[in-house]
Image 1 (cartoon, rainbow, N blue to C red):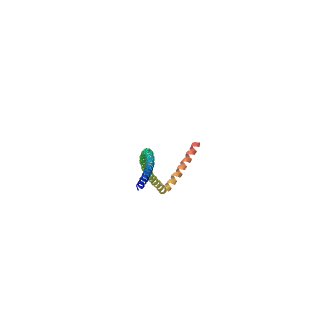
Image 2: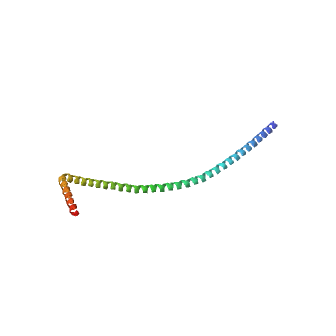
Image 3: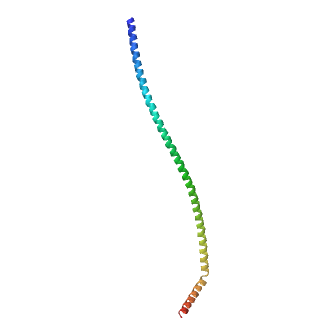
Length: 135
């Protein structure tokens, strides 16, 4: 029976040694995996720093562009308001010309006979002037 106890202890010792060897291999693989994860995270960290820098530059450029667009928009609004004022002025000028034209047309219609007589007399005077000039 003692032999059986020694055999059991020997089997236990071999099994324990195999377990220890297996645990050592697992721990070494875990260490290698963790080293790879750490290296990957370091690379990711440096990439994130680069992305952060580029994002900051892009944001600054975007802000500058937005300010430029805002400034140009304000200038364009002033120009559009000026053009609107010019349109109002031209419209008023056109109305004034129409009133003058209507007045002239009315006077011409009202004095049509007198105007025709004045033109006839003017023609007669010019004819007499030409005759006297040739003589």
